[in-house]
Length: 426
Ligand code: GDD
Ligand code: GTP
Image (tube, rainbow, N blue to C red; front, side, top):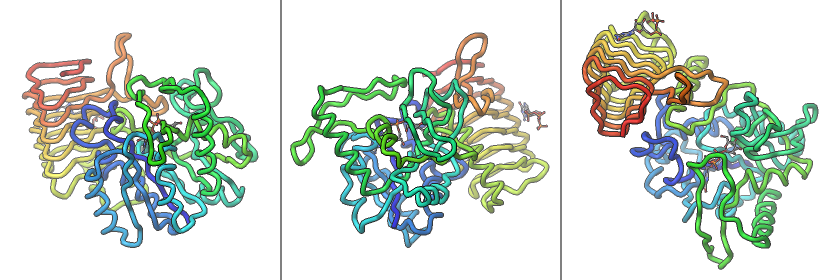
């Protein structure tokens, strides 16, 4: 049998998702009408042999309770449990800590999904490759531009056999443009011993407080902890500590997806993720989407409780949340409008996220700038300065009538009475 683990991290992560993560844990933020994590879960439910799913992280127990309840109601034959790390143990540390739960019932293999990626999760194809090669591990890979590649784990593979020859996490110089999508399939009988030997290697070596990281905001300096056995515990990561060893094992393969893939790190990246999941829903003729018409340019998701004036023009790539109100003559495109927001008549919302309970005045404009999909970035250069491409209003912001907000991030509870551009409003 096969199980699945979704890695969700915890409250100290997702800092780049601010200001939206100030009010909601990132995995629960809704894109295309559903929490980010539920897109991962939906993919898992399409693999018939998976009956058990673990959500592993260090958020409070209560955070995923309602989500898990919903999963149980929609998929009564799949068990979903939240396993909480007492502190951040790292992507592999969490798996190891909960190995008894994962190993129970002797599954042959299990999937690991980073919760913060948006893709079509071709899990069945990964399973097929795993079986065909009698693999120890299969990783999902995708091609990005050479410039973008160094922000991700990079894979060097043999094109013919699909074997992973070499793996480097966020390399300093270019080694490959085939990158780690954050989706893995591991054989249970080899992954736990390799985590264990990585831990042992670490214990035998002078201790590093933290790995150098290209991403300063996410770097964590964790105090050393002790687990029940009195062993030193430190952060153990799949990427840095496990994958390069696996590459030496000869039984590590990559499935290269040609389908869409995006990372969801910054708050702005929710806009492309929303677009990609909406386009996928449109291609599969999902009943959830709004019916196309003269004023609805697909794909558009409108929550059944939202109130949209028929003269408002929406789409493409728009999600309207529960109880939101969209007035007459409004134009919205490439945007997410969250719960209880109100957009007054003739306002225009482009490349933006409108926070919960925010109010946008009549004839106001809230706009960002499109970013080229291939760049995997949510900032753009304007007049030689790097600015936010997607405009984001946090919870309960107010934009006055006729006010124009361009390329800004606005923290919760702010009131914008005059035009602003290229600013972070704190
Ligand atoms: N449970 C748990 N415990 N989860 C964690 C922990 C932890 O201590 N640390 C991170 N995670 C979760 C995050 O929530 C995320 O879903 C995933 O593990 C990976 O997060 P990071 O460790 O921040 O890595 P990254 O996102 O910068 O890069 C990873 O993903 C890229 C693809 O999006 C790497 O795997 C890259 O190689 C990869 O390209
Ligand atoms: P469509 O014909 O609507 O597809 O527009 P377009 O392709 O010419 O432009 P785009 O969709 O990129 O977005 C701008 C459109 O939104 C304009 O054509 C206007 O119809 C509309 N629009 C722009 N500014 C405003 C505004 O301030 N208020 C309102 N209500 N609509 C606006």
